Image 1: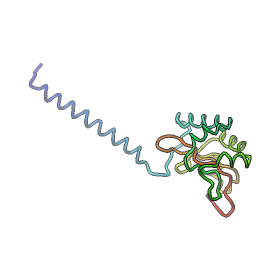
Image 2: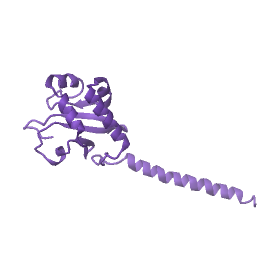
Image 3: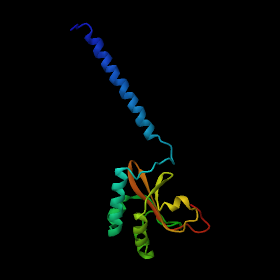
Image 4: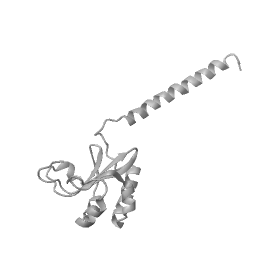
Length: 157
């Protein structure tokens, strides 16, 4: 082996590794800076399915502690002013909303803007009159963002 060429080979190998690493960082940056409103269908993603499974179980058991952990801080539960954040579980108890929640969570979720929403009819029928649920990614983790009835006639979502 010619030891005079060893430093040149070593430098070439280091530069090749560094350049290959830079290219993969560019791909990661593209994933992170994806424009808003372009969420792809997440039904095939294990993290989404795992979250949805835990959410369905917690709702079926009325496990408010687990549900609270899974919700966004500004969780929306009513179109009325003040219909977000704390008070959701009392609102659901008073209005008998738990059965509707369980029904909607069993539906298939589809992408809509930055959310995965159910039922699918929410995205296809502008006159849909039922409850709707939305899930979204927050800092890389899925969160339950809203569960609301149909908006009042004077308000379109």
